[in-house]
Image 1 (cartoon, rainbow, N blue to C red):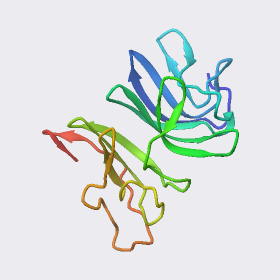
Image 2: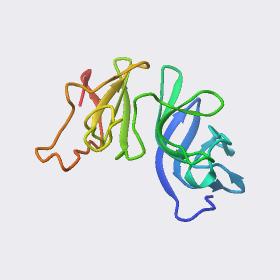
Image 3: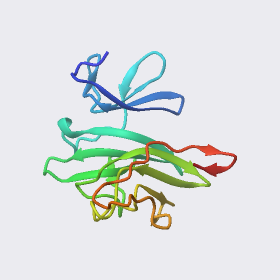
Image 4: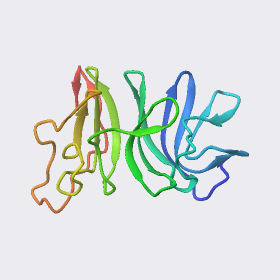
Length: 174
């Protein structure tokens, strides 16, 4: 199906009864999809595409719906060379989420909604990225970030801790 090489699948989720696949690819079958596509069981189609961003840098990784807004870690570069690394979909295009990541972000590996707040985890730290919202884990309530009492830090601050997954078990976030 994919017409680019290599193909990287970073995220799959169900949204409005469609399979959403995102990652490092630019087309599926004969359609330009710019790193994200939807499948309704019969057809592949474009979704969340915006002409502001150039094709070669539209990589969308984990994505999640939170409070009726789609959030994604992405690497978006517009035609002027401006980058954004964590965005929300405004219905027309991707917008940078305030206070989250500069151009040097290590990355988000997992996002989960827990007790009506969005948690992100991965490999990021304000010591390595002045706009990182926490140390490997942070919480977004739709308005502001919380660094969760300092997050996770290795004893050697030259290295980044990396949270690869999160789960909710017995109403607790692990």
